[in-house]
Image 1 (cartoon, rainbow, N blue to C red):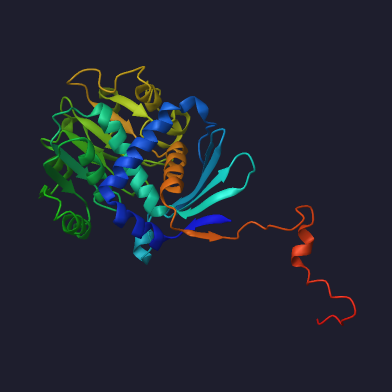
Image 2: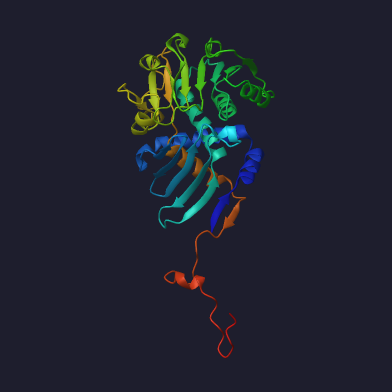
Length: 343
């Protein structure tokens, strides 16, 4: 039997456990996976690009479990009432090759993306970080806010989006979070005075949302929205001024802010394993060039499989009496001797 987790099941699980607890536990699970970096068979995701979007497969495995996510990215989907990103995940037993878990992964990806940002901020953002600037208040914004607040004592959130309705949505969702919410009229206004900046937009284009004039000493930047070739969010001139952290360099060179760049970077596993400090100096500007890596999905799927047991077991894999006789499962029962077969 295969455990199947649908959207309502995950919704109930998060509500019962608490979203802040879920984000905290995912942060720990993902960092633990990065500590085991050498245990994984890794590759850049397989992407099929279209004029209007992309569909991707993201596989990774260790000696025990294989994980793969199916995910899309279609920036124009909201015009038709659909989400920009939707995903399904599968977790399998390496020894047998049998799937253990099939799950919705749109909500889970939103949670693990924010948890990953929080994980890096844990090592890179200054301890006295109190102000977060959000550039883009779409689907990821609330998750980022709550996950980052788990790691730093955030008090003020300065936010901006080109869509006023998205800003209203964010303000409504965060109204009960005991945070000072400051809607801003521009990116420059939002970033002014911020210790921590998250940029997460959906436009599939090369943008220059964050410019050198907006940088300040000691700032940490999460660049979350750039995740495919030709899609960036930062002015390229910003990059040389930053200490750049990535998930998996071969993938980020294709999809991230550093696509087409030869600038030196640090893979996060070096920081997780203690071979390098996340913040080199108090005034350093750190940039997490986040594109989303399959290792994070592997950690999230294993965490979910271990913790959510109130799910439906479904017979997605045949279980023939004789495993060499699959054909028999599609045949009618053999007639009893002396009786006419009833077809």
